[in-house]
Amino acid sequence: MSEETIIAGTVAGTINNPEESQPSSVFVDVSDYISTLQIPKSYYWTPMEDITTYELALCVPLFGIPRDNRLEYAVNRLPDNAKRHFKEC
Image (cartoon, rainbow, N blue to C red; front, side, top):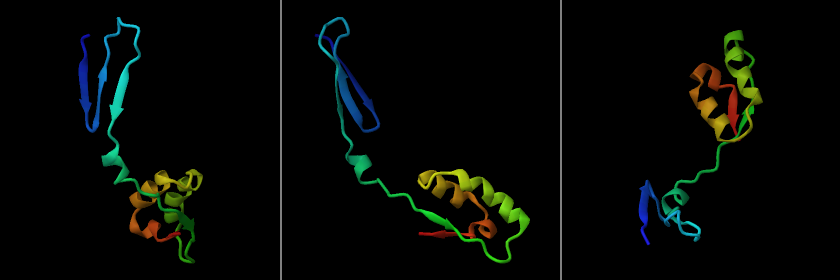
């Protein structure tokens, strides 16, 4: 039986010869990923009384983003003057 070994990052495994009728088997080592999992931060929209139309224009596109890591990424990319209108939960 001829086999190839695949190593990509922390994923390692073997693929059996495709001409044989046996299914392929893959071993995945997820230990590196488990230690780096993080719960995404949630944010509340709390506009300040002195919000400018420019700051509002920067923040409005974020209203449609689900409360997951995409929202955290989008809030972190805002300039500080617009970021101040979001409070971390």
